[in-house]
Image 1 (cartoon, rainbow, N blue to C red):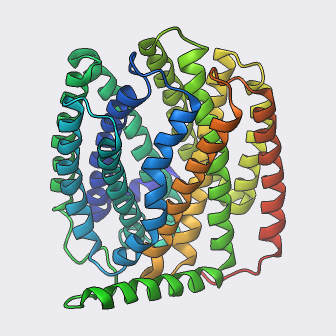
Image 2 (image 1 turned 45 degrees about the vertical axis):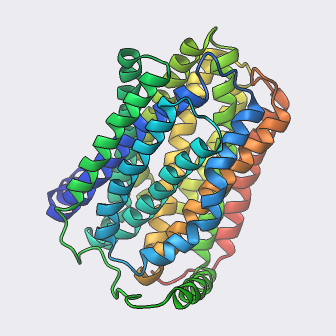
Image 3 (image 1 turned 120 degrees about the vertical axis):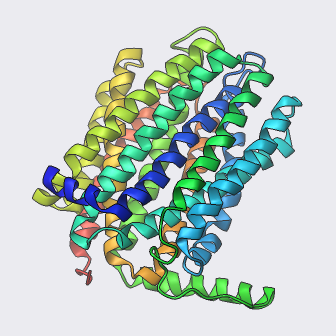
Length: 426
C-alpha cells in the first residue's frame, strides 16, 4: 500500500487535485463550526430534536432534488472550471451569510443562504469524485480514494478545530460568528486559487457541450441526461447496490449523529459551550476512525473484496452499537464514535471506488450527483425520524436497538444481493 501511495503522490496532477480538495475541505470545517455554534449551541437558542430536524431539512432536502441536475452539468462543463469557480461562488455566499449573522438574522433568509453555500459544495465534491480517475490509474483508485477522501475528511475536522479556536478568540456571539465566516470566505478564495494550477482540459468530461443552447433546450438536455444516467446505472448492478448501501448507511449514521448532538448538549455536559466542546471531541474521534479506515480498507479490499469488506463493516457497526451505545455513557459513546467513523469511511471508500470502476466517464458526474442527493435526503430523513422518536437528552434504547438491528439486516441483504448480481464489466 505504502509503495503504491508514494507512486500516486508523485503524480503532479494528483497533487494539484488533492490540494484543491484539502483547501476546500479545511474551510468546510471552519464554516460548519460557525454554523453549529450559531444554530445548535448558542446559549440563547435552546435546541430540540425537532428544531435540529427542521434545520437539516431546510439545508439538505432542496439540494437532494436539484443534485442530479447539477450532475448533468458536471458531465457537460469542464470539471477544472467547476473546481475553480465553485469555491469563489461559495466565498461570495459566505460573506452574505456573515452579513446576516452580524444583523442577527436566523430566519428563512439565513437558511436560504446556508442552503446555497452547502449546495455549491455538493456540486464541488461531485466534480472532485468524477475527476479522480483522470489523474490516477484504474488499479490505484482504491488507494487514491482512501488517501484523498479520508485525509480530506480529517482535514475538515482540523478546520473544525480551527473554527473552534477562532470562536474562543472572536467570541460566541453574533459578531464572533460573523468574523469566523469572513475568515472562511477568504479561505474559500484560496481553494479556488489552488485549482488554477490544474490544466484546463485535464479532468474531462470527454466532450464539453451545451454552448449556445437556449434555456428550453438546456432543460430538455438535463432531463434526457438524467434518464440516460439512470438507465446506465441500472445496467450496472454492482454500482446500483453500492448506491443503495451508502444511502442505507447514511440514514443510520444520521440518526446516530443527531443522538450525539443531543447527548453532548443535554446529557454529557451542562451548558451550550461545554456541549459544543463535547461534540467536538466526539467528531474528532469519528475523524480518527476515518483515518484508521483509510489505512485498513485498501489492504482489506485486496484480501476479501469490496463487497465482503462493506458487509463486514455493517456487521461490525451492529455489534458496536449494542456493546458501546446502550450504556449511554460518555466514554463508551466516544468509542462508538470512533468505530462508526471507521465504518462510515470504509463503506464510502468502497462505494466511491465501485462507482468509478463501473460507471463510464461520460456519466460519472450524474451518478456522483445522485450519490450526493441520496446522502442529503437520507440524512434529512434520519433527522425527521430522530425528531419524532428521541427525547430531549437523546437517550433512547429502543432507537439504538433499531439502529443495531438495521445494520445487521443490511449486512445480510447486501451480501445476498451482490452474490446474486452478475459481474459487470469494469
